[in-house]
Length: 453
Image 1 (tube, rainbow, N blue to C red):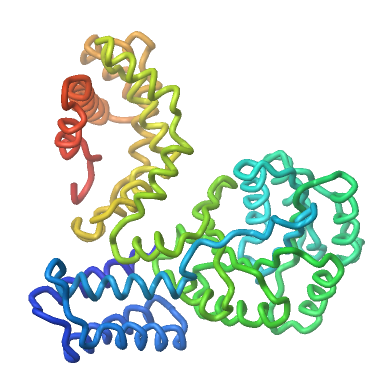
Image 2 (spheres, helix red, strand yellow; image 1 turned 180 degrees about the vertical axis):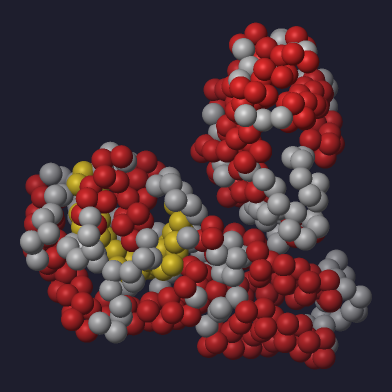
């Protein structure tokens, strides 16, 4: 997400190097580039105009601090305005209400509402410890009710079974009664996708809203729709008085226009963003972190949170104890590390959150092939337990058998063993005094194979 914006902003920063102060001329040149960058990212025109004007008013005549270059000073202004544009600070659902907290989910067709309902339910259950019921009022789309039921069962959410012959308003009312009698903490109501110009369908969702009086009314935005999504968000907000938005498919959107426009257009915060197809891939929307990623400064806080959440602490401690006792680091440990990287979104997902990635050769991050991680695991799985524990026994004939069993080439097996030996050396350094510094210095020799590394 935001690759195009980040690349363009990085080039803008480079253009500012060498200036002794921010003048009207160089600020004007820079803002011209900023304007084009935002427009190409599909940011709504009123948003672009307001953003550029705010940056101009704060940048002109501004004395540059002795510790900052003009580029850094202007980027700080841009960063502050980006954060302000997207909501200043992270907002949350209104859960401080007599249970159940009712959440009504709306949006256009194909925006990913049903999957988002399941993601949101899982997030409330896993992260907030809430008991959650979900239901669907979408009696129009074939198999929509069954889709939500399957997702609810997979994620251990209570599902209120609606029938296609029921009226959507009645489904919502009956689901609320069931949620109250069952003492559920939250009820999430999925609705049919509808165009904001469809008067009859918009009237229907107004009736649903009036009948259940939700504590939160959310608009699901397909981040790849750009201007159309923004126009729809405005119309839905005027009809339903939205309390917030959820961005979906951000992993497939290189532009980021919706993220920069929706908050300004609706005046309501972006609460979450869907970062993948799995129901676990829903993240809180932090304006400051997103602004940092857009400007190529990374998102280390989110990476740390992801590591703490998804890394297997017990396995990590087991490896640490093995190394400390001098038992060494074997291929089974290496496979565990590969699996943990896959759980955190793969190499590209991790690298994308690190600062300075825009300074790598063009396209280097996207050229990191995460399928190499899967190949690595497949090769290791084709080895015997003895070979994984004692890699030194792997000779030419064993390599041939391992390659055949994993559907790879002998060169792939050799490359994996070479990488493993490098990792072994790093782990030995960690066990010595000052080992962490040595490991970080050695990390450059262990980056994944591929163009740009």
